[in-house]
Length: 197
Ligand SMILES: [Fe+2]
Ligand SMILES: [Fe+2]
Image (tube, rainbow, N blue to C red; front, side, top):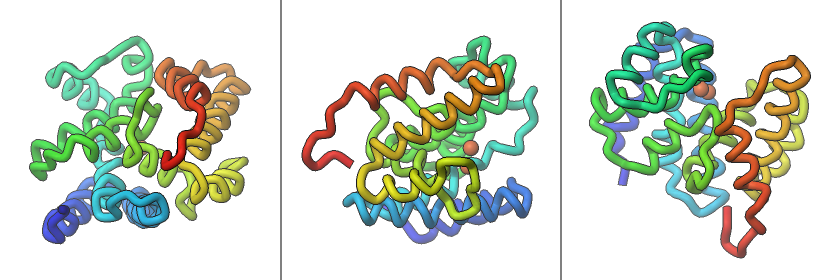
């Protein structure tokens, strides 16, 4: 059960830490995550909380992201050193725990995994991952297909979103993060099971 007060605190926390534009994105992601959770039999309030928290470290500076990640023993590889912004999910999870006392492991995992994905990610993490890609402000190519897939299957929508982003990066000669590839392999290898989101 998520306390209404915690949802209010998370909303204020996001408001304090983000520009108007990113805060508006955050609210749209929270709405989208809530809606997907309802459609897939997940807890809408936990999904909303994950949405409110997911980008709260998105405007932390590069050096600070690296410092916090190292201090917390988070995995920092060559990719993260080159593009510290990839750490904003893990750092947001750490801040949520420390500043808002969020202890729900699935919410923290969802926040942590929202940028690259994570092999084996759970239903709540998939709902957030997909919500972040399909919120109404998104206009990337292929987004309409994702919006159609998401109510039917979060697995398939997440898979399509990763395929899109990996090929987008490859066209620009930017290698995809190994975790995105691993997540895609994981999603592609699993046959859909009944009851799976
Ligand atoms: Fe993000
Ligand atoms: Fe986001």
